[in-house]
Image 1 (cartoon, rainbow, N blue to C red):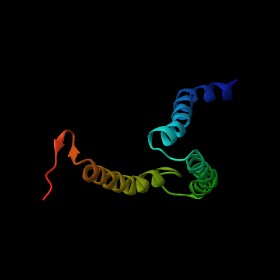
Image 2: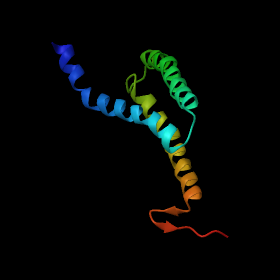
Image 3: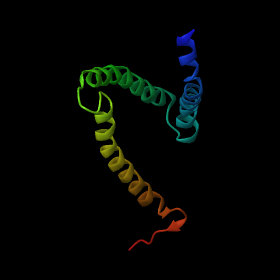
Image 4: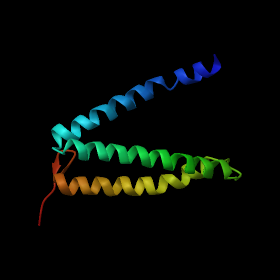
Length: 108
């Protein structure tokens, strides 16, 4: 019964994630105009990568020993590249779209 109660706490995020991944295939084929085989291959590669990567990261974090615990160093050190790549992604979107929050950028 306890495991069922813990699993019920993840029900909301799991439903949201599954709905988003379901409509991602629709987006790839109908909005982005990709071939159905290519769109399915993209989703397959991401799932295979996730299936390989998750146990490796789990083993690494389980073997980590620090005064902050097993997971906190990974979260702190992971925040640095996440912030960098998020910033770079924002710059790329600004350059592609030409505006940021409705303010149009000027081209030289």
